[in-house]
Amino acid sequence: MRKSIKRALVALSICIPLVFVSLLLSGTVDYKSQILSFFPQLNNVTACRTASPPLRVYMYDLPPRFNAGLLDASFPENTTVTAANYPAWRWNDGLRRQHSVEYWMMGLLLYEGNYESGLTREAVRVSDPDSADVFFVPFFSSFSLNVYVHNMKESDTVDEKLQLEIVNILRASDYWKRSGGRDHVIPLHHPNAFRQYRHEVNASVFIVSDFGRIMNISRLAKDVVAPYVHMVESYDTEDDKDPYESRHTLLFFRGRTKRKDSAEQMRLSKFCLHPAGDTPSSCRLFDAIVSHCVPVIVSDRIELPFENELDYKEFSIFFSGNEALQPGYMISELRKFPKDKWVKMWSRLRNISHHFEFHYPPKKDDAVNMIWRQVKQKVPAVDLAVHRSRRLKIPDWWR
Image 1 (cartoon, rainbow, N blue to C red):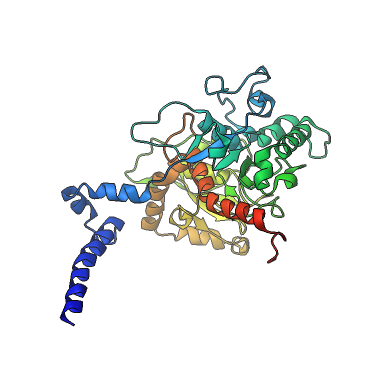
Image 2 (spheres, helix red, strand yellow):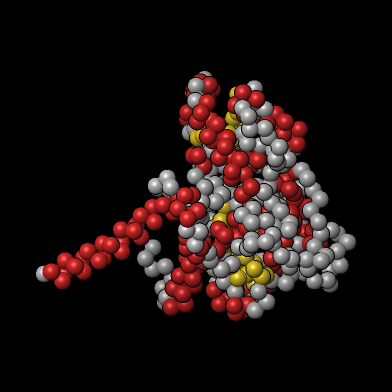
């Protein structure tokens, strides 16, 4: 009996300090910084707990007509695309910029330089397909749509022919056959991108802006929601003395695609309206975020980027469609919104807006690294689907 009590006391003497340190590191007890100043080695414990190796990505070596050639018509078709000859991005407005996620994703894989000291990337390109976690298909489907399609009723366009070529390339690939395409990553950020043939590749991980037009073939469990590339310039020089009083407009909204002249108005507004349109999401939300203008989201079916890491309620306000239709309701709620709560949201926007910036060369925790991190988090589910598909005689019998 005495021995068992002694063992229990020893266990408690070990467990209680460990629990206490865990609470300190998680921020539950407000002495984290003081403890770490005395025991700096605990910083390494936190780092070890969160560090993970980058995603290993094999990128298909497609002819330039599928990517770089769309950016630069003079790009030689028989030339391999590399970091050295990758065309610089030069479109600063319009739909080409908004849906250019594919360009930045490919750029990260091509980039061969070093990050800033101590920083790492979320994905690395591998030359051996057998060592890859996923396979990236660098077809700029959104850019192709914007370049070659001017009317949705057009048929037999260059864009449609490129889509069919990609499908045939993938069907002939042993790595596509091995997984049924489940471990392949395909950007389809524009709602109409790859529209004639995307049902042929719908087992893959899609990179989408939302699910408004592809709900029948796309789902949150499989695919990744990526932000639009913002149209207005980032607000890097905001004075933080009294941001609430310096923003004289209560609520700002501008509907058109070209919004470069809206940057100043967003920076002078406390709230920026983001209603659903012909799709659940739009670039307005991300223009608001980088302008540190608290987004007011009216979209009942919106899905948001990086939501497993970011709590949008900390820096956005949500109204249902029915609430927004009630005369005067939304404006009344915004007018009585507490200043201290708004300032807290504004401060949070400043702290997270870098996650919505696209860079080449890429930067730590920027938008393109965040997207690849989201892909990495899909890998366990992808592996499960691939392994099940290889042994099941009746696919998805449980349905």
